[in-house]
Image: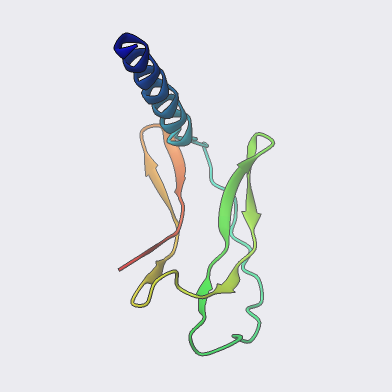
Length: 100
């Protein structure tokens, strides 16, 4: 019984690890797409924070995902906008995130 539990725990860790590898895959392009800012509508409340447009990898290319107003997930959190980075492999999008 203990052997089966150890094998099951190992299998679960392996599956979780495989998912983490897939989620952290880095996608590079030789030239990043042009930014097309959208008109920012009026904020729903003074507490809302503008979350800039983001880029998502879809259909073999980066596509713009429109910006929106959002409430911070926790009081005191701020939105850190995404950015393009460049290294020897090409350009890569680092998505925006909430943080302190």
